[in-house]
Amino acid sequence: MKTKILLLGSTGQVGWELNRTLLTLGDIVALDFPQIDMADPQNIRSIVRETKPTIIVNATAYTDVDKAEREHELAMAINGTGPGILAEEAIKLGAALIHYSTDYVFDGTKGEPYTEEDFPNPLNVYGETKLAGERAIQDIGGAYLIFRTSWVYSLRRPCFVTKVLQWAREHETLRIVDDQISSPTWARTLAELTEQVLSQSQGGFINDLNQNSGLYHLTGEGSCNRFEWAKAILELDPNKEQQIIKQLIPVKSHEFSTPALRPHNSTLSNKRFIDTFLLKNCSWQTDLFLMLNQGG
Image (tube, rainbow, N blue to C red; front, side, top):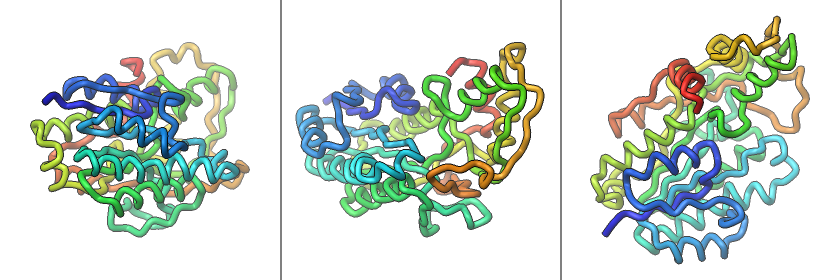
């Protein structure tokens, strides 16, 4: 029987890349809002039961970190409750579940890369709801992979990279924080590594994922602060002649008033992922160069 993949969140940064990358594995049913409403438990159950997938890939999320502070209930429904329902339905079908989480489950005070054994302590509602989703899947069990990632970017949706490129074309001076540190992660690489993990199973997804089920950190290799990231974006911009920026100034987070707190250093260690699947991401600088020059 041919593999059927239910891809949720197909128009997002990661979802768009997954929709292309996972084609090698089987037939894809790719959905996004409003076809799938992750805040509606009955809608989720109906979609999964009608589709009867072999693999469910959940690339949906409520990702507006600041807005989540005032929309706690909606963020929890999408990020916390919805993934648990997917896990329940996956077990009933004997399907595998792939889910993406975030470095924002940590408070950023460790001072070195976080491992999967480190205790989460989210500083904001977004991180709190994403942690709830992780725990719901883990409590239900089955064949699942949770990939915690960080600072995801592409050119297809608004993100830090697209904003910096835009700002550099509109302003002569940019002020960027230098006390938030993590690992930029290209959406395409995240999708490709997901596909490579699934390809290793050679069709026996449930058996293989039962063996390696769990939580893994998966980000670009290395880390930087947002100021360093912005500097690299400007330097690697293939259309530098369009920039009018003359000065990039490092500032501290407290100089910007935002509803949600951000962790200062939420760098993740990819060691468990590398050791388990024998796969490794490129450095964040290499991926950024490739993305800017390939238009992705």
